Image 1 (cartoon, rainbow, N blue to C red):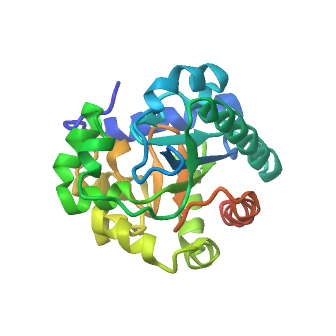
Image 2 (image 1 turned 120 degrees about the vertical axis):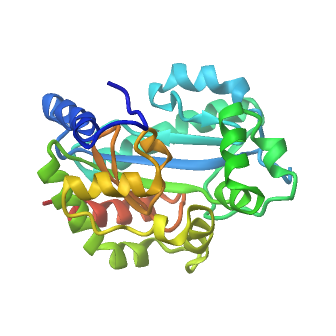
Image 3 (image 1 turned 60 degrees about the vertical axis):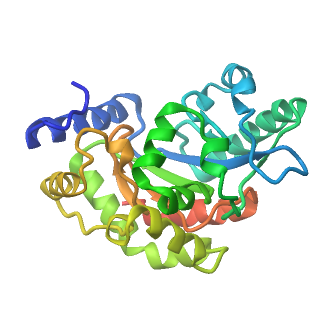
Length: 270
């Protein structure tokens, strides 16, 4: 059953539970993952580039984990579930190398600066894909520009039950001050930008202590039918069955990523 806006609490929680069951069946109950989303530029140009659609097939053929994560002006590089931080960062490094090689052939580079400065026409120039145009229209001009101005570095810890999900979520939530301090390259500016487009309360890590709390939270912010649309600095990823942390800033510096990954791995190891 896909997620729907008219789901009952039981249906919603059962649907999330399918992701936990998948993790349990495949041995991903404590696996780690990374998503690194950056902006694509033509060297020397002012705007990020839309040309990623011309190389999407090449990227997907070379590394399947790019699938569904390529869109106008941005590329998100993912890993698959990994057992520990060395394997995690090692695979990310390999995927970045593949992406760089393919992008270079098309005159593109992938950056992951925490914040980029956008001209006023950025929304119409860079995001022609209908789904993103609709989303940006819903956010409005100021919030839409804020949403597109930041790169993203996200860490995942797989869980295989609601009990484990709540426990890991709470453990990472308690560690947020430390994790934020390690990852804050822009001295809070990216965090403030994210609050602008998400809303301060929505972006905060809510105190979720039970599956029922997750259901109430989903209803409050209107993401029962589309959990992918729920943005917060910390969330239970309903599709992947992971606890997902969005760090304060993004970077392509593998030593920086490794430090954050180690800290997240420790915090989420419960």
